[in-house]
Length: 197
Image (cartoon, rainbow, N blue to C red; front, side):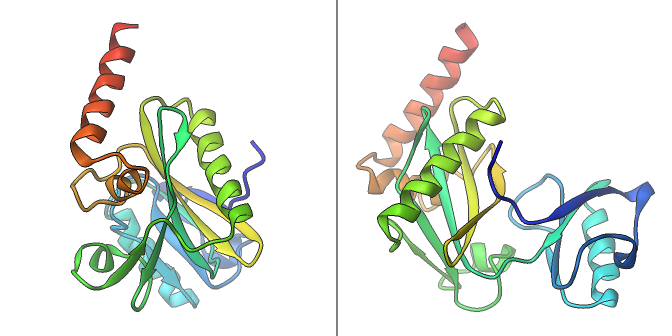
């Protein structure tokens, strides 16, 4: 669909491959194919770390994704009702946006609306809507991206993003003037509309 992603492969546990048997170079990211909250995700810098990362990711499911590591700024873009919400930048104080940095108070700075130029903002919003549509999703989703200079890379889509009052998507909605209660109500309304159709 013309949306840039890091170079990568998916691998089943029964087809486990050594790094030398792939076209990937270090550093790379190993992560379970599904799931959430960055559980089982590792950034690896050598062959030994790669093997340990596969062991860890395969604890959670039988398919993993291995992709090139892209160093840059991380952004998340919510889509609701076919439209992109204001973009949020995710900046861990140290390391990457792993489980600890997602849920430990003060471990990550979340800026919404994100301090980015209008052109990058437009490109990220359009890419998030395009991914949402390409996957045939309905009510809402949240897509994660890395921006490296002028290049944007789609990382993953969250088809059931966190919806606590402090989660990323409610923060984005708030920046668009939609309070938490109204956001939840709209998501429920859209789900019911789809069910009736």
